[in-house]
Structures are given as C-alpha cells and as structure tokens.
Length: 305
Length: 301
Image (cartoon, rainbow over all chains, first blue to last red; front, top):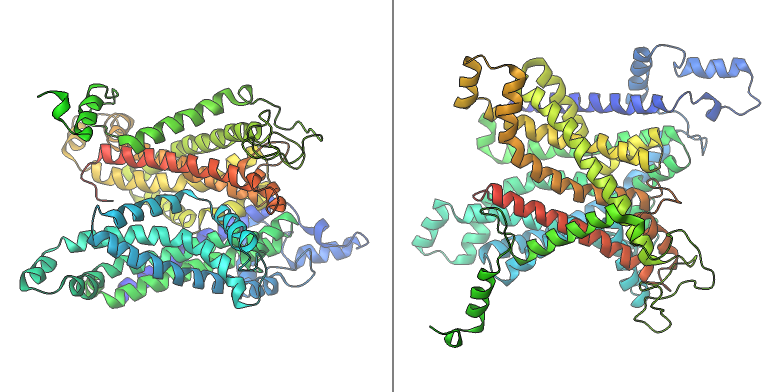
C-alpha cells in the first residue's frame, strides 16, 4: 500500500512538473517583461539588473530552473498592476474561492446524492425522469447564465438576495446556488449510475430475501458500497468547481482567484496570472491526491492493487 | 380488428410505424433524439447560410429603435421579432450570426482537436514504451486542470479573437481524445485479427489505419459530438469574460456580457442568447448520447 501511495504521489509531482513547464513556456511566449515592469525613466543598468535577477539573460533551461525555484518559494515576481508581490494578491483570493467552492460542494452533495439514490430506487419513475432531465440541463447550461438568471429571479424580480458582492452570509446565496446547480446535476447522475449497479448485486438480493426493509438496504448497505466511486468523483468535481468558480466569481463580483485570473489577463498582469493559475492547479492536484488516499484508506481492496 | 376498437395510443403506434423515418439499422433516437437531431441540423444550416438568413446586419445600429422588446410584447415591432439591444441592433440577426461563429468554432475545435488527439492516442497506444510514457504524461497534465483554467493560461499568452480562441480550444480539447483512443488501442491490439495481421507481415501504418482505427471509430465519433457541446460552452464562457471573441465579431457569450448591464430593464438581452446556448448544447449532447446507445446498447453509463 505504501508503494502504491508513493507511486500516486510521484505521479502527481510529475503532472505538476509538466504543468509548470506548460505554464512557463506560455509565460515566455509573451516576450520579455522588462519594458512592462520597469518605469520608462529606468536606466539601462537597472534593466540589466532586473534581467539578471530573474535570469532573463540566460538560456531557456536555466530560466525554467529559476522559475521553478522561485515558484517553490512563492516568488512569482511583482504584480505589474499593483507593484506588490504577485503571490500575496493570489493568497488573499484563495480564501473566498475555497469557501465558495466548499459551500457549493456541500449544497451539491445535499441535492445530488439523495436525488441520485431516489432515482436509482425507482428506476424509470417520475423522479428518475426528472433526475435525468436535471442532469442533462446541468451539463448543457453555462454557469454564468445560471447566475444571470438567478440574479433576474432572486435579486431583481423578487429582491431576496444581494445580486453581487462579498462579506455577509446572504452574499453566498446566489453564487452557491449557481455553482451548486452545476455540480449537483453531475453528482446526481453519477450517484444514480452507481446505485443502480449496486442495487443489482447479489448481496442486496440476499438482504431482500432475508427480509430487510427497503430503505435500510438502500441507505445502510447499498449507498455505503456505492460511496467509494462517488467520493472519488467528488474530488474531481471539486476541481471542476474551481473552474466553474472562475466564471461565477465574475458574475457576482466575488473577490476570488477566478476574478484575479481574469483581471490579471485583462490588464496583462502576467506574474499574477501565472501565480493564480499555478496555485489553482496545485489546489486541484492536492485535492485529487487527498481523495485518492482517503479512498485507499477506506477500501481495503485498493490497498493490494 | 378495425381501427375503431383500438385505443388512441395503439392507433398512434400503428400510424407512427407506418411513417417511420428511415434511420440506419438499430438507431432509435425517439422523439427527443429526433428533435435534437433536427435542431443540430438547423444550427449547422444557420452556420452555413449565416448572415444570409439574418434580416438585418448584425452590427447595424438603429438609434431610433433602441431596446425594443420582442414583438409579442407591447411596444414590440414585428420588424424586430426578438427585439433590439442598447444600440438598436436586431437581436434575431445577432443570434443567427452568433450561431455561425459558435458552430464554426465548436465544430472546427472538435475536428482538429480530434485529429490531433486521435493521432497521438494511436501512437501512444500502439507503440507503447517511451512514446506512450511521454504522451500519457502530457495528456495527464492537460487533463489535470479544468478546461476553462487551461484555456485562460493559453489566452494569457496568445491573446483573444476568433483565431486565437480556436487555437486555445484546440489546445485544451485534444487530450480527452488521446486518452480515449490510447485505451481503446491497447485493448484492440491484443485481439486476434490484429495479431494475425502482424504475423502476416502487414505494415504498421496499415494495421493502425485499416484494423485498429475503424474499431475505435464509434467511441471517437461519440466523443466528438459531445465535444461540440463542450466547446460551445467554453467559447461562450470565455467571450462572456471578455477574453474570447471580440467585437465587431458576434458571439452569444458576448451578447450576454453586453446585456448584463441592462438585466433589470431588458431581460430579453440576457435570456435569449442563453436559451440559444442551452438548446444547442442540449441537442448535441442528446445526439451524442443516442449515438452512444446505438453503438453500445449494453453500456451502462
């Protein structure tokens, strides 16, 4: 099992390395940042000093090593726009994004798992049909449009919640609903699929023969058996939520990492954009790694694999 | 038995059997699927015919007719069936021209990303070894981030506009094809007909193209159709963020971004482009699902 865990860890690190290389290459495609960073009255020596400091005068391989080393120390350079370290800006934005993604995840689990179970129990019934419609709609509707429609409905026509901003609990309502809708539809679909499979298995049949009540079979035994792929999927879904948050934050003026990335690109503030994208990538990879390790701890069958 | 003794439902079944559409053998899209196919066809037609179908020039402002509501509401004019926006541009015409951009970008993405991904997947799956290790790690890295985030990383380097967005979507969408094809090839290449062809001395390229690729074609087609829907959503999301299609080009996402400022006084500017996106994506996804069921009736997802 330890070997397997180490292998999984190594895989994640390798993926991260390839990702940093992609991001580094993209960053270099934007050209020499010196004229963007230095004020126009800077002397040539100042410019040369800056180039040396960030290794811009050396070859690409050396630059990549410097980039990796700096990134590992949280140094992505100075924001062109705010003149503060890029990573500080990103760090402030991580909290709001994680709390939004977390609350959306919670909502999605609370809606998606019961809906998926109920749909699987009465396969082909009204609720099952509703669930599959819900799942298809959730897949086909862009997040930002859900957000806009919720603003029309719950902030303008029926002014219950604030339409944008950050701070109080009420501000969470619309962004959470927006992101939660997106995630709950796919969680419902996956829960349904796994429950349908589990309910077909022999042990469920045996339990029925032994006369256990229907709901106790579904909730105590089947859901528990179906839960592992669902937990794995939740980790993946959390990453998708981070992606969905980019757009949702824009709609609701949420001061998170997505907003930071989009603003940074619009203002050509490359250090902040890179720092934010790489930070999100690390968050995503860490969550997936953690989920895999948790699943491994929960399921003895995985340990021998 | 005369028709009169049958219930309405049974009579309908008999009639519908008589006029069944000549689908290929075993393909049963049903009512929803047929509707979805029809809608996809209409969208592709709108993309081909494009501006010729639009009653007005999509960028023509008419300051005498600003923010007209759709025609069925009071103050609406039949001249502008779906109303006008804040610059007096005809919403219907903009939706039609937006369809053209959305479809061209999405279908081109699906085809080009498909060709790249399939090629790399074939190489990785068939050759194995080093080629497989390198390609698989790159695929992992590309799939390690949500598509929108990867797209933003590329946009920060490449910039915006139709050409760049197309490039960005291709760069972010090829990896799923490679992963799918690789896993298909790995299982197909162990099957008898491939092993026999190898023993008979058939060339490597010919084995890949004539024996392996046709057996993976069904799943590739399903993925490609589903990919169109995903590309439509990605493009509209990027355009909505201001990082995709730029004016004077027209895009549904851009229309939504523009309409957002007038959301409390002109709902049609945010509702209608959204419906266009949802209907399009829903249709392509439904067609993809039907194809999947047709190719693999016992598949359980």
